[in-house]
Length: 274
Length: 333
Image (cartoon, rainbow over all chains, first blue to last red; front, side):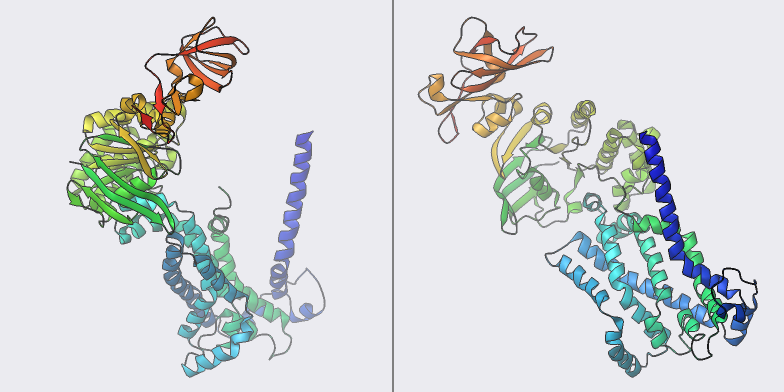
């Protein structure tokens, strides 16, 4: 009897999970479907049956170079992630292993910067970027993306490092490891899963960031988000081409996410499941 | 060599004083056990010696050298942690070799020392496994192996057996004692278990609230406890304490009598009581007797005693086995 109830509940949970997943995934699916419709089909109302044309992809590629914004996206996402890690690893390390009375406050303060609407500081940042000659440069945008995602990176790493038992570090200290030895031989190898999933998540966040990338770039440093945006308003309503551009923009990160999903899920639930 | 001297060592965490003032000498080759209830400062004291905590004041000397400000690794000590603290991403071999690698020892020497340690500790078959694939006892041995290869001047053990089950604890206790016989190196061992303290120690240091209550050999502490705390802490089951007046003794405030020093009779004796719980262990019988006008007294009788709940018994303390304490809880001798 108990078994029947539990298997029915399991079925209900599975159906619910699939439903939620489909709702979340539907916009992406519809984008992909629209991208293989003709423009006529795309504006003629809701339909899940496309005519399977790849024409939009060729048009998009011929109108605009895909490769340059793609490379910009790669450089910005990877560059800002590496820069964020270089800053965040020592920060999280210090907070996790030698916390002070203010550690919690600092963490909260870092997070609070994410609660502010980005548009509130758009003008000052735009002016600073202009005056320092950083507008439409990869360096400027890398720094910007690093600053945006740094709080999350520090928070995630802090959580992972907290899971590493202090006694193991003390053992290393007793065993004669220098601070450097402790970090290289003991801490980093133990924190690799955490660092890796932080890195993956941050790459995704940086890849998808649109507010600043669109506003602080024009052509030279414009990543794929700006590439998509350039297909929206100026040329009228070309939904199929816009969808094709979007699909091309999200495809790389989707593929990366697919291959690293095990690592990501493990990283994101780290500490929650033992 | 491994002679360790603590001179007026104190430790405070912020406003909280954990160790008010400790003076202690540990001789070379001694097996010293720090014992006391949880929160008594025994682990802190060990960590001060290890260098994992800084002293607030006072001096720590190892073999005549002031190491108070030295880093842990420079003190020449090895520590075995309660959680074993093995490196989970390294094989057993690399765990044991780690301190030698940190000291940039020649690889051929490392190999030999690791092999030797593994042989002594019965770990040869497990050298290529990860700690996660080992049982608790094996992990403990790896932790000891990692300590041995360094050839430290003293070993520090921080409650090393508390994560093991009772049977394994007994075996490991014996193994650590045998290791001490073989190596003849100073060992400092922290535990809250007075049985471990009694069975392993050359010298026991009883700590309470950061102060040393008494230092002495196990039998010294058992036979001549300095105060009520030591009397109650050492020995199992606990010593019985009776207000002196009720025991008919006038020159003391409290008297103590160990459960094993009480004779039991069905007919006559000093105290009359009713058996509450009788624990039959085979070799011994523990009786919890409700004595009229005094309260519960524990009696340890050898062998099997045919009494059970509700029986009336008479208890008589053995002559010369009474411990007398004054109103401050200090032993009167």
